[in-house]
Length: 176
Image (tube, rainbow, N blue to C red; front, side, top):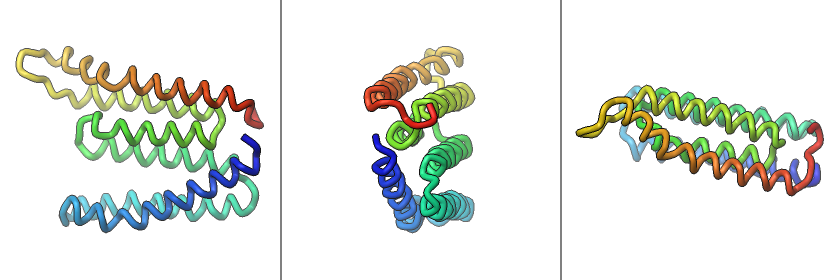
């Protein structure tokens, strides 16, 4: 992908994510309830995301789109990972968010960034699955842990591999 089209895509994605962070904050509050802890978490996560995007738009205006794209992906990776750790839900609820970050890394970043995101995401999702097993009747804890990981990890790795192969076919990205 040419640098100009990658910069335009990055700018569009940052604006889209900024819009989503601002627009979805009240939607989440109505959808989930008005508990003080939840309101704080939504305000913090959506606020951090909006601030990240505003800073990235300034960085993009200065012509540093590769750095902006990498910071967007890594910032979202941190946000998704943090929320996944602290929401108390099973890992399966969060897999789609990790996939979204990998898709963004594949779309606007280098193959190296995609590989980094894929590795960190896989480790983090496995750690969450391992620490939050929900053993069903007749299964021991170890079996429940491995079953949870087997339910998402192979598919996640196939998605990342497809993204990586697509990035490879698109030609080298500057800096690789």
